[in-house]
Amino acid sequence: MSWLRPRTLTGRLRLASCLLLPLMLGLTALVLDRAFDRSLRVAMEERLKLQTYVLLGAAEAGGGQLWMPPQLQEPRFGQPGSGLYGIVADGNDQVLWRSPSALGEPLSLPRADRRQQFGQSTQGLFFYSYRVTWETEDGRETPLRFVSIEQPATYLAERRGFRTLLWSGLGLLALLLLIAQGVLLRWGLRPLSGLAADIKAIESGEAEQLSGDYPREVAPVTENLNLLLAGEHRQRERYRNTLADLAHSLKTPLAVIRNIDPGRVEDLSALKEQVDRMDQIISHQLGRASTAANHQLLQAVSVRAAAERIGTALGKVYRDSHRNLRIIGDELHFRGDERDLMEVLGNLLDNAFKYGRGEVQVTLTETPTQQQILIEDNGLGIDDSLHQTILERGTRADSLPRGQGIGLAVVKDIVTSYNGELSIGSSAELGGAAFTLRFPRRAAVTN
Image (cartoon, rainbow, N blue to C red; front, side, top):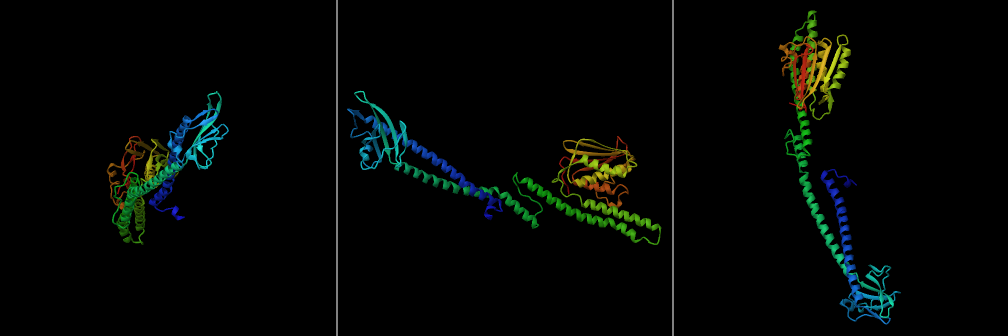
């Protein structure tokens, strides 16, 4: 039964059409056939009613006898084998007169319970019965029944011709619909075929991104795929650059270590210093390399909740010097990797707790175009001459000032990857350092 579970969209749509099209056309044929059959019966009833009125108009009764003229207005009553018959009976359904056309025909009088009745007899013949009460010249009332009977040959021929036309027309329509559907499927699914071809070109190395002109329904998928591809490409580039930077940054500490004399006590502190620098360099480069490659596909993260979690943890670490952490402003949701947000806030809040004097404030604001996170402390602040130096893009990790450089470099790299900005200033309210983070409302990853 694998044919019931096609593995392609085209196969599924074709299977659905093959199952639904006969059903819909069959229901349509049934409705049309019933309607046409009803119209044929209505026409037959009207025709037989008219013929019955012809019999009624031609009849004369008198002296206890019924008289019918030898020639009626409808000539088929006088033609044997014409298929139209007339019968007149009394109140007890005893036949008083048969039309000449009924000679030699094994006709039986149809049963009728109503005064006027149309139907089909047990012989399959259509009939129309009309009961009247005839008043004779001497004032007596005589019940009579006039019946017109017709063979169903004409009705059956017309119905058969209609059904032949109906099914041949619907069959042709079904064929045309299948052809049209095949063309429409081919045209409608062409973007998916193009998408598959573009993906194959990427796999073979002929292209780096999906560049086709896709319809609106497929565009979100292709955009996200391009984001994933671009993120993966950036991640590879980041790893390559990180390895190159790491190798370059470790040259100086390694050169110093080579020249250290293990026998000299004063060189041991220099050795520890170089080991610490190497540890910082490695941490910084690993932080750059692990920055999330694609942020737009991730869920929004509450900035307030993240800051509260970090503040609670740092309050325990710096319990001797920490007095108060205030988080004020709007409820922001960072659209990106939660680990990136925790890394950024963790570094900045750690600096605020470490170099402040017990007061830290986080202010969250949002405008129609961007989100802003301001982190302030009441410490000594950062000298103005170092504001740009410690955030300069491309600065070597081993040349950054000790104490607050490696962490800020990691923060700078993460923020930049979200098309954000990091700036350093002085806090007007608390008097210490002020770090301002700005992110677009819908952060986009950069190279």
